[in-house]
Length: 160
Image (cartoon, rainbow, N blue to C red; front, side, top):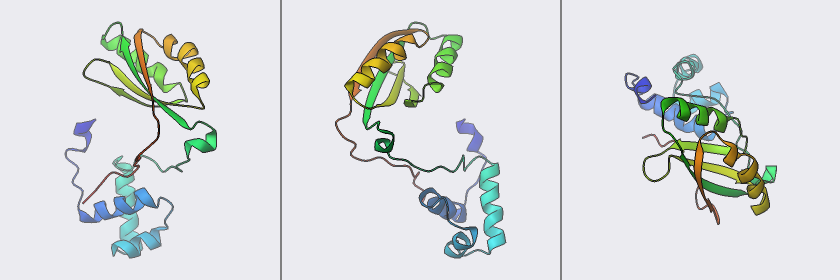
């Protein structure tokens, strides 16, 4: 995936567009063009090129976890029994089907995967642990850590 963007050259105008769109995804093209210093048509061409090259993956509304009554974050380290390509792919497919698993990373180090799950409370996590996490394919060990509070959470990638 990293190589996908290697030959793509983003200039300062692309960076400016991305900085604004990450914070104001619903800004009109005319307002964006004015802020960047481009004509509306040139700005739209730039945005469409960023979308077509998957630099802009999608547009979303960021909803606080508390709105869904899932205020707690639990970071879960998972070790799997076998690290074959097939077993890892099966695990990863299953993880993608669980709505409370917000992030999943293949890791180096002691655990194979690090997950961030969101839950309403400790009993909700117990249910998720017993019904979902232990049932994921190939799981041999689970270690969990509850977040006490979120200090910072960013949604924007920094551009110069």
